[in-house]
Length: 238
Image 1: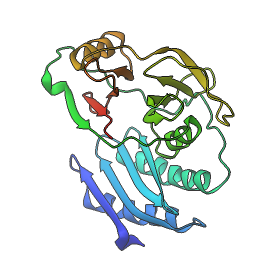
Image 2: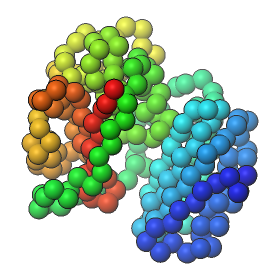
Image 3: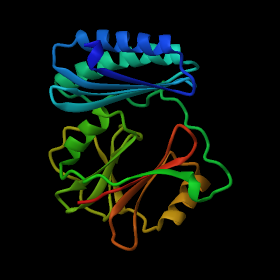
Image 4: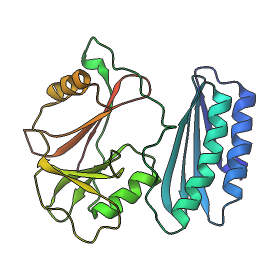
């Protein structure tokens, strides 16, 4: 199993810690009553640890932060065990709020083009809000962008109170029927903003992420804060 795991270290993570990560993630995956493949681990000396994998063909991600890389690895291996168990059993809503979720660093006060560090343009999946909520949990996202078949428009599910799952669309629409996820639904469509306006709103309100519709095409976008203090942007394609 260990030779099938890719481990990357950043910011000077010692080689022995990378070897330990390989062994501990292999042990966590080896305990699963499932086929666990494509394991990719990333460790930062600042205490950020992440593992991506496929469990019986389904993509998962676990991301943890701590005061140091050793503690982050402890959380990561245990989190991987829990995530594998959750995606191979009957789905149940995750607990909310998540007190262990670390706060994000502030975005720099001086806003320039470099503040958006990464732009991703995936082909959005057409799926029910229920399916999107399951992906949100499996991938450990704060927010997940997809295309809602009911309205044929882009939408998001994200983690927020009071139930821990909320649905928002680019246009206002009625709540979906027959959802297993305890969704609350935004009664408003997404705000129409260009990217600089979205950056200013997110930074000014100190938001962890922002869902908005670009005025040029009406497509949904997600601007989000990264763990390095800069921003990421997801623009759906397809």
